[in-house]
Amino acid sequence: MVPFVDLFCQYKEIKSAIDKAITETIANSSFIGGRNVKKFEEEFSEYSEISHVIGCANGTDSLEIILKAWGIGPGDEVIVPAHSWISTSECVGNVGARPVFVDVEQHFYTIDVQKIEQKITERTKAIIPVHLYGHPANMIGIMEIAKKYDLFVLEDCAQAHGADINGKKVGTFGDAASFSFYPGKNLGAYGDAGCMATNNDELASVLRTIANHGQTAKHNHVMEGRNSRLDGIQAAILSAKLPHLNEWTERRRHNASLYDKFLSGKEVGLPRQKAGYKHVYHLYVIQVEDRDSVQQKLRERGVETAIHYPTALPFLPCYKHHQNKVENFPISHHDQSRILSIPMFAELTEEQIKYVADKLA
Ligand SMILES: *Cc1c(COP(=O)(O)O)cnc(C)c1O
Image (cartoon, rainbow, N blue to C red; front, side):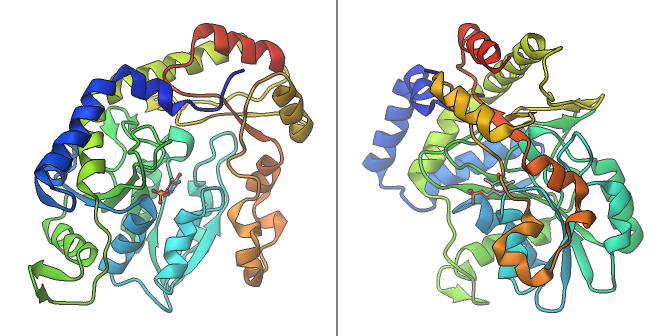
């Protein structure tokens, strides 16, 4: 049996540090805000090479709070890739604006820079590139367009902690970045958690205010905000895990290289990595004909897989009113019935990888 992901396996490796983090938080009662959150924010700021990190409840909130801080709302449009997790477009609708979908690049699952300009109107305010599966989007091309049309860029880094382009980390290209620490992400808490990151001092202070009931100081509510905070136990767990992230990432990359080797020459579309781009393999996504039956047969042989995501965003029931046409999103539409995420986590053994590759072949 090869599980899709095994979070307990990681816990066993660092059990004493995690248990200590939890019991210490309980002992000093720093459940909301306080020293643990501040410590993790500083550590993650250093790790991501972005000057301000503001913890919040989850990655979805983080996207939405950033759009709110920029004043994006009714009448505005935000450009998002057609292929992503719902959060990327949901945040746009939830501030009252309209998500405008752009197809992804063939073979890369990230927004196609060639197709962005044709979707820009006077109402366009921002672009949300997603570094999907852990492979960076073409940030150089995106920033050029954003500059030309004066648009905000919000990098959705939920699946790409530590990924980079020629050594420059994702999250440092745009005006702001959003990270998720959902348990299964490359850096995961033991519950929901996320953060916002920016080099802009003024924006950082607005983000912190919105996420904490619009307070600039206790009981000084300068606006209506919301309750979206990183809790102390999650922050302590994240601090205990962060020192291992680089090593875990290298293990994911090593595992990916083993899959690449074992699956090369087979009738399987393999994930690609652009020259100079560092893929952190949050997911190892292959393409196969007859995907559903392949998935079923793997399951029968004890290999657990998943699909990220079975329906591209423009074709979801919640966007039916957009009347999105298949011919406008040919790559996303082509991919949605062929993609299959096979087991990927740092602790996978070479034997497990070989087993999966053999069964797949
Ligand atoms: C996980 C994820 C999010 C949202 O994160 P949550 O913490 O689950 O709210 C946003 N975007 C992408 C691409 C994700 O994979």
